[in-house]
Length: 157
Image 1 (cartoon, rainbow, N blue to C red):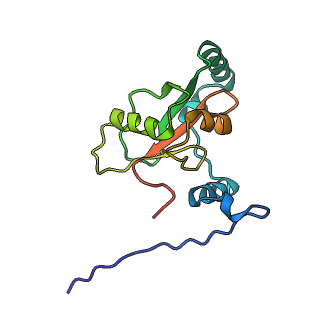
Image 2: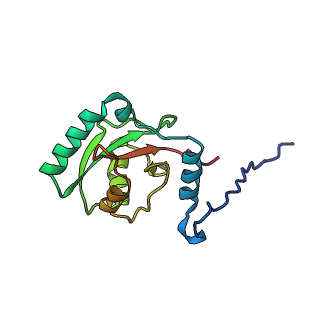
Image 3: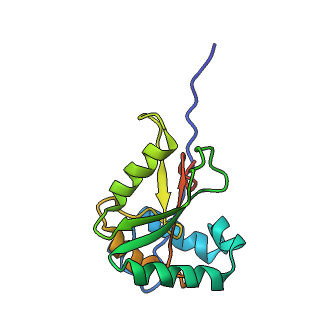
């Protein structure tokens, strides 16, 4: 006789000292603890292109297109999602995270029932957030915003 078994992973996370309970979403808490434990989603672009080259390119792009956001979008290391044909994107600053995710989904040609998750510095940004706000909060010293995507939540079971 076969029985169906459900497997659950239970995770208890406490709010960091000095922070209010309302300041933290589950994804931000996970990102905080992953970063504190030394886990970092590093970009292949950052590892292969020297900082000076990236910074010069970022400054040039921002000077030429001040109303656009330069973004590097890469597949997460252990993801089985298809690779993008290009990694660099220059998008309007009023575009939302959700709109960018929709555009990227189209480029990777996923079926509608397949999930795709987008991360910025180990957290899931709200889909309604304008990319200009995400950029202001999370851009790197080279003037690029780095996003990774995965077909499964790399922080869950």
